[in-house]
Each structure stands twice: as structure tokens, then as C-alpha cells.
Amino acid sequence: MKKLLVAFLTVVLALGVFTGCGGSKNSSDDTTKTQTTSKTKARTLKEIKKSGEIVIGVFSDKKPFGYVDEKGIYQGYDVYFGNRLAKDLGVKVKYVPVEAASRVEYLVTGKVDIILANFTVTDERAEQVDFALPYMKVSLGVVSPNGKITKESQLDGKTLIVSKGTTAETYFTKNHPKVKLLKFDQYSEAFNALADGRGDALSTDNTEVLAWALENKGFKVGIDSLGNVDTIAPAVQKGNKELKDYINKEIKSLAKEKFFHKDYEKTLKPVYGASANPENLVVEGGVVEK
Amino acid sequence: MQDLGIKILLQGDNLVRLLQGLGVTISISVISVLLSLAFGVLLGIVMMVKNPLIRFITRLYLEFIRIMPQLVLLFLVYFGSAKHLGWDLGGETASVIVFVLWGTAEMGDLVRGALQSISVHQTESGKALGLTKGQIYYYILIPQAVKRLIPQAMNLVTRMIKTTSLIVLIGVVEVVKTGQQIIESARLTSPSAALWIYGVIFFMYFIICYPISLIAGHLEKVWKE
Image (cartoon, rainbow over all chains, first blue to last red; front, side, top):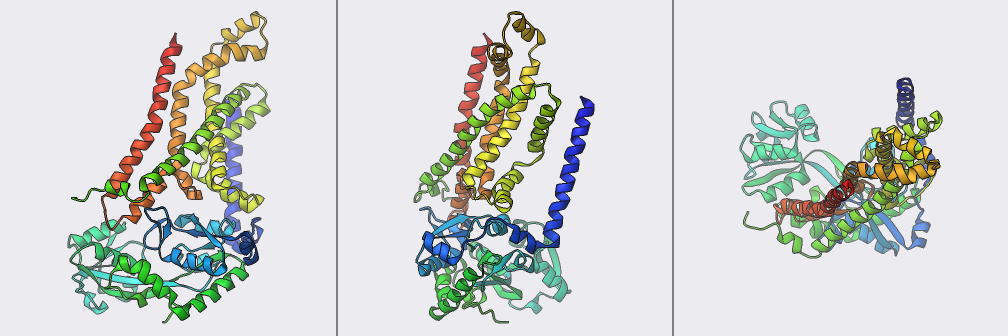
């Protein structure tokens, strides 16, 4: 009996090792190949129109980008755009709640037609999905008591709070070695440290600092656009060119009516307040300056 | 602190939405639990067979399910089946499949353990009376095994109910996710909502799971006779 068990465990482990290796090889060597072998293809524009319903993956708990209000209706910056896309296509819209970690999988397996979930464009992701033109951008922001810090140069010799592993940490380490960095593992710890006065300012994504400053009296965002600009764009399954082209065309034509500015007014402004400058967040017609 | 987070519950359709979420949790749990209990008893009996090949296969199945985290199984069934087999399963179907696979494996092992714990003379006495193998199982072994199973089986059932909170990762919105949506959409207006909403969810889980414990306790007492 014991022998049998040992033999069995060996087989299981061996299987695990083989399948494990096989899997990782696939994903690292030729990601594009894994995509084409996916047996569930995304729907074409024609199929979507014929079914009368477009399926869009959004966040359901990331206010103000994608969330569900108290009536159970999807709302937010991403959803506002999703509604318009569906309206112009002449179809109904069905929202699927996605999590940050499963966004790519939803597209790869064709479970949704489009992902509109605050999806930052990165090279790594672009290997697995196709991004359309951006409709939003994020960069770094700096929040300080009463918004004292308004220029990067004011930070020299002062203590700046950052979270480990964020773009803020890399940016200041590289460009401003004179700034003393106080690093924390978690966002909440970092923000608490600023509230307790353990640093002169805090830096992270500008959307984060804007929302936080509004909730915490006595703090203001002095710098709301800094460092590299990351863009946020709709994504479709790799190779679904027809749908991607349609979204691009739509984004370009919506620029004429300043659609995303209206979107900002409706969804983001109530959260970020009048102090934030929409030009630092909104991308119109897919054109990013800088 | 003066604003009471509990009022969030009564805003709009929030309470109805939580109850709908609870409905999803309950329906997926009930279907999975019933199927798992039925298949589990069968698997337990199969695991008693002396044939080494069958033993090996059932053992492989059991260990595979045990080693794999439920989350990995959910992703495998939901996304994996779409990618490699071309099946477009719904989130609910995928959840039930995973929970039945898991429940059956664990239940099967519990049944096997209970059957093995019944002393050999019971079977031998049955044989002496001229009962067939099926009759021995049906009249002697299964009824005794079921009694011994109650505590562990109830433990498994409540564990399955609680684990359904994972299915949101494949897009099924159940009670915990509904709660998170409510908390997040009220984050700025009432920061203390989290405590209240999670309190209500705790109470909801308690209401489902507590009667199961009561029934289990009752059955144990009755069957002791």
C-alpha cells in the first residue's frame, strides 16, 4: 500500500512538472501563438450587430471608473463610454463584472467583446490583446498639506512618501535623488503617514491623490501631472481588427462633440472636485500630447 | 462617526440587491451540495473496490482536486475550457461543475473512511445471512456509515457554501461581491458602510449555515438510539 502511494505521488508530481513547464513555455515563447490557438473566437462587428447585444467587461467596484450604483445600474467614466458605443452601434449593452487579474483572460477566451476597465496600455498586455485609441491618461500627482508643494524642485531635501513598487518610487529615485523617500508597502499606510505628518508630501497616480485630497481636509494636490504619461484604452481580442477599427473611428468622431470632456463632467468631476484639471486626465480623439 | 453606515442598506435597491446576491450564493451552493453528496456516496463505494486500477484512478482524482486551489479549478474550467476545448460555459455552470468536482472528491473520501471504519464482522455476518453484496451495502454498511459521516459532511457543506465567494472571479456576482459594490459606490458619502455591510453579510451566512449545524446535531442525537 505504501509503495503504491509513493509510486502514485511520483506520477502526480511528474505530471505537474511536465504540464507546468509546458504551460510556461507556451506563454513566454510565443504568446501570439497561444492566442491563435484559442478555440473561442471573438465575435465580429456583424455578429454583434446581429445578436443585438454587445458584451463589455467593466469594473463593478472601482468608483468612479466602473461601479454599480444603489439601483444596481452600472455607472462611471468607462461605462459612460460603453453606453455611447452601444447606442451608436444600435445594440443593447450587457456589462460583465471583471477583476483586474482576469481582464486579459476574458478577451483571450472571447467571453467579452470589449474590455473597458481602466485598462492601462503596457507592452506586455499589448502582446496578448489589441488596444484601441486611448480615452484617458494617468500620470503622477503630488499631494501635500494645503497644497504647499507646487513644483518638483520644492521637494529637494524634503521627505516624500511613496508606495513601494509604484511608478512614483522609480520616477523620483531616477530623476530627483535629493528627495528623501519614505517608502511603505501599502497605499493605506502611505496615506496615513502623510495624515500623521511623517512626510512633507506624498506621490502616486494622480487619480489616487486627487480622490484622497478631497476626502481629507487640509490637504491639496499641488502637482497634478508629473512624470511619464500612461494611457488607458479599450481593448479587444488579438486580431479582432474590424471591431478595433470601429472603436477607433468612434473615438475620433466623438472628439468633435468633446464627448470625453462631458464624460469627465458627469462622472469624474464629482469625485475629483473643481481643483483637478480635466486636461490632465481626459484624452480626446485618441491624441495624447507630449 | 455620527453618520450611520447602516442607512446605506436602505438606500435605493441595496437590500434587494444583497438578497439577490444571497439568492445566487444559495442556489449555486444547494445544487452543488446535493449533487456532491449523491456522487460522493457513489465514489466512496467505488473507492472500496479492491481493483488496483480503479483505486489508482480514484486516488489520482482525489489528490488532484485536493492539491488544486479552488480558484485555479475555477479558472481552468471557465477560461481553460474556452481556450482549449472551445466550450463557452456560463459562469454559473462553471462554478457548479467545479464545486461538484470538489465536493464529490472530498465527500467520496469521507464515505470511504466511514465505510472502512465499520468492523469487518458486520460484512461477514451479512454474508452468513446470505445477503448479496448490494444488500450488504444497502442494509448494513451505508446506514451505519451515514451516521458516522454527519459531522464531517456538515463541515464540508458549510465550507462549500463559504467558498462560493470565489466565483466572482469568473463573473458571477454573489452576496460578497454585491456588498463590495455597495461599499465602493458609497465610499465617499459614508466611509463606515464597510463595517455595516460586512456585518449584514456575516449575519446572512450565519442564517444559512446555522440551521445546517442544528440539523446535524439533531440527526446525531436521534440516530444514536
